[in-house]
Length: 159
Image (tube, rainbow, N blue to C red; front, side, top):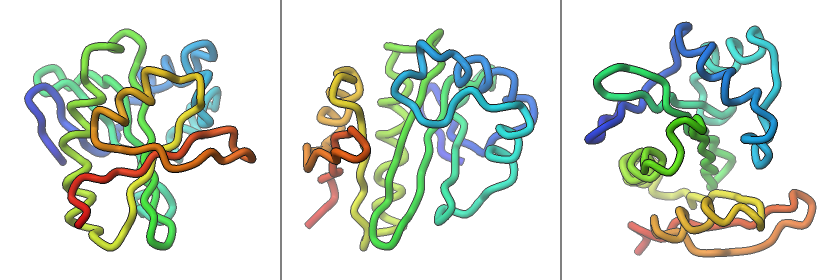
């Protein structure tokens, strides 16, 4: 569990499922995301069962006072690379919750896995996400045609 001024990054709970489904099954909002429009049982299995970073874990971003689910962060480790992804419920978009959460978790990841490169991918047309990554200290690295995505590498804390 990681706390910020307004948020708590924590494991998902059963009571988060309905809220998670409300934004994950919003096809217009989730146009840049791969995990969407699944059943409640599929989400339950993904959110509540897996705690292995090598298989990919998803952390809830919840309001520090109300415990309301605001969004989520996905982290997966493959060899010497850690990929992160993030989503916010559209009700809470453009309020800085993702930035605040990433600012808190990126140094933790860097400290725990100093040998790993931390990357994030985004679609070329997702300007808000690209701006967020650049603001957090990521730099553009490459275009992956197969995934139709840009790759950004986190540079803070690298010697």
